[in-house]
Length: 358
Ligand SMILES: Nc1nc2c(ncn2[C@@H]2O[C@H](COP(=O)(O)OP(=O)(O)OP(=O)(O)O)[C@@H](O)[C@H]2O)c(=O)[nH]1
Ligand SMILES: [Mg+2]
Image (cartoon, rainbow, N blue to C red; front, side, top):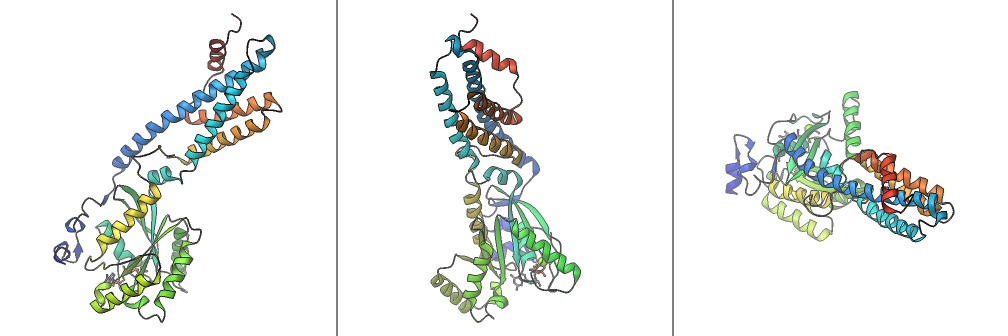
């Protein structure tokens, strides 16, 4: 339409001119990303501190029971209270760990990978979205060999958008290596964008839908990944063919595809909105709900903490000393995140919560 003509001048597409897109996408600065993360890790720190305090108290109470229960200073009820605390903590940790790595993705950027046959327009799409000629575009198939990355913010979500070598069999050792890297990158993707030249790769096929069906099932693989299909170069199609493709598609029951053109900008806005919705589904709303884990190292210690709490419950009825040891391990794992706690602090709790030696 009119806005596309305005937005696409001198062979360069200006997305800020496309309605609503100015706010949707911009290059992400390191400072902006750090700011958002600081806020999130501040809230997280408070959660971990609270857990650490609860665990420390539970540990102190168990030790008090072991050491002083014979003198009748510490009663059985203390142990039941500890059990309750541990159980609640286990549940909270499970919820926290089951966040689908949302926080880590927010920290490192969601991996969005462009893939497809040579000449489909992957590099063109990267350039349009990142608003600069990041990747070399040419009519020669097999232009891209290395993975080319752009750090972007799409709808508020940090994204690492990667352009990759076009997939085809090649005897050229450099292109072969490029294809290997492309496949490896697709394997790590959170969102795969399959780029297809609609004027060639799709319409010339006898059964375009079967082709797309195969594509979806081969890319989706483990089911965790999100696939977006971009049918590029619609500018080369007649209005009639476009309507035909849309119709064919709607009746197919396949996930929606985006018809677009890197040359005219048509459909790019819609594509970015579809992408944003996928990012939302993956990351959640970072400003709502419980704060999420932002570091893989934290996840490691939290998992170890959770495992130790599980072993606590296992030992609890059989061997109190062993179960106390598991609490100590659990607490130490949290300490690796929040900072260590001294033995004195545990003794402080024992002597302040019980009438021992008074
Ligand atoms: N008409 C038209 N041509 C396009 C469009 N997008 C890309 N092209 C052209 O298609 C050719 C290939 O584009 P590239 O972006 O280099 O394709 P690629 O998928 O990165 O190709 P490889 O790196 O070889 O895998 C170039 O000549 C582009 O100008 C489009 O939307 N419409
Ligand atoms: Mg390319």
